[in-house]
Image (tube, rainbow, N blue to C red; front, side):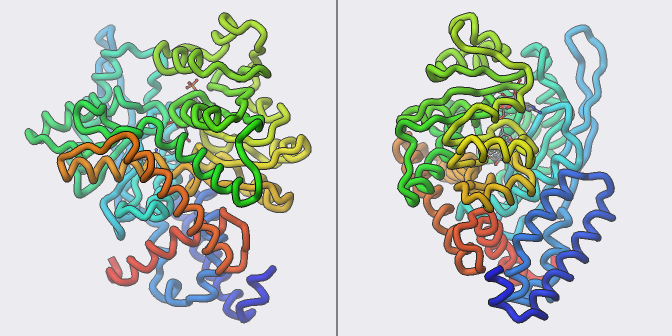
Length: 460
Ligand code: NDP
Ligand code: 2IT
């Protein structure tokens, strides 16, 4: 590989040994946390050329420190359901790294949430947030609460109980949660109301993704999906491709997926399939986004209900099979580990040109390796989906200035940030010997900013 030729063999060997030693400690210290191991191993591997070129990061123990959260909170979330029964869930907040700003990251409510999931998401968030160019550190939170089938009052009581405990540990200059799977503007509103009540002080900058009537930013709902499409569009333009007349598949039908579909369609793409946790719909005429929005954002429905209005479409229970439909552009936007090597091979065989990640860690290492070997344009999550947290940082800025920017202004800033992320990832990849590899480039560009800050701030 180019990198091996560029660095002296012994510096590369030293860097590899360092990474392997620290990764072994991560495994031993966090037993059974497979998602956290997967994320750390992936990022550590990308950083080997950095350590070979700059031994200062090894000397300062950056990897040992960056992979251990500054703080991990777990707490009881008791609440009463509509029948008056006591329910108990487990809440989490990982405050992973505050070297370039206060902890910042989303909140996930899903029954699968555990320490491993929260830590993998928080670890990724450190590098993603650095890539945005905004002054935000890395954090993540959530609970193993299942919002499905819960009444509005149950959701409100749960959010209030979650925030009653969390309010002790967050603040506009400390830690700023936002949404993620199962947490949107409604939940953020309930959490904000409870935080305000606990604190006795109006501090809109403590949460992002708020309703525009109490300090939310325009474009935040659309930001992750729109940002993903801006990123992919810039990447494709560099290679003489465009969304116009392309065939697109999007997994998921939540916040990220819906606004990714909207912007892709605006740019002339035909989206032929999308999914939820019950399966996927395939509509060769092009998915009707108004129906999906109504079903998933307003009615809390299942995606198969699409067929009632669009009987020519088909519904399939096995969500993984969505990737067997031939397409030009594949956008996983549901959850982690959606795409393994087998699925990657099918996508490649069917002629996919672009794969870009709206969800966090949807492709495993083998799948990413296959995309790179086959010269598929690959947009890694921490670069391609950074638009959401980037606009969250713009929301914080507006809150602290007590003003609101227009839709056009925030949208233009989002587009500029996505273009910068793309360019910085490309040039880091080039500089460290992996030309065109945005995955390696994004990890390196994000790391350098945080690693340098950590050295200057001393051993803390
Ligand atoms: P939502 O809850 O709005 O939507 C999630 C969608 O994915 C739903 O359609 C859901 O199906 C489906 N889904 C969730 N979990 C699973 C699963 N285990 N198996 C199959 N389908 C599943 O979440 P978001 O759109 O906000 O988040 C989607 C992804 O994007 C996550 O990985 C998140 O971390 C990431 N992300 C989110 C950002 C944001 O700003 N919201 C920013 C950056 C990344 P169903 O409707 O049936 O539950
Ligand atoms: O994964 C993510 O970047 C998010 N869920 C958004 C985080 C945020 O603070 O807006």
